[in-house]
Image (cartoon, rainbow, N blue to C red):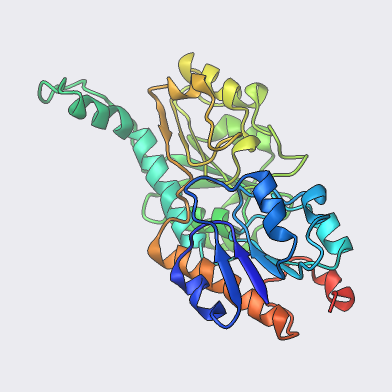
Length: 324
């Protein structure tokens, strides 16, 4: 079988496939659309990244494709309807990056609230003149209110990690999270109230047509001037230009972002905001998480080749009609 991998990934995702013909894209930037089309013409499986858009047009060229093992939890880069129509199995990498992304969320919360980005730039610039009583005063976290927008695996873990900080937890989700309500005494509220009441707001939603720009200027103006907004889910959930305006105008205190609306591009206005901590999409960037993600992709491909339903299949309805 022929397998194409759209970027260098840990060996745990390549070595198990050694009995098959595996080609790995060697570039350091995302593969171009035309080259991706050419590669997909003959392969039986592909391991793409979230940055690789597999739309209906591209999938139309993939005549032999049996499985897309997406190297990510989300799969909004794939036209799921088209893949399912064509009998292509789609898998993802759930669970294994929950802790890594939740930990980075807290890193951003701490960094934004204590102004670590500004502090490091001050030291590196040579302008640090010594301790001063009012130098770069940030905000404490203990005893504050944490708002979680989206309480799936990662959002739930972020809330659980607040133990020891005596924080009140509000959450917004379509469904009740009985785990958080029982363990953390969390309260389910509507999004407007959450934004109005919380000192720290962390976003953990998938990107859909309903969540795109869910956090726009109107919503951000509901927030406290001392609030910190953090996003480690999908960049387009926040209106970046509106966020930059809110940060510059002092309408909220700070933001911590690991994802962006048009990655790898970042709104120029946002780059100028001193009170924004900007990370390059490293939520899952631990050795443990990235290696396990690669392993899950390889396992999914081998399962499909062997006629087994992969455990992390996201379009289960396609299996009875899967092409042989």
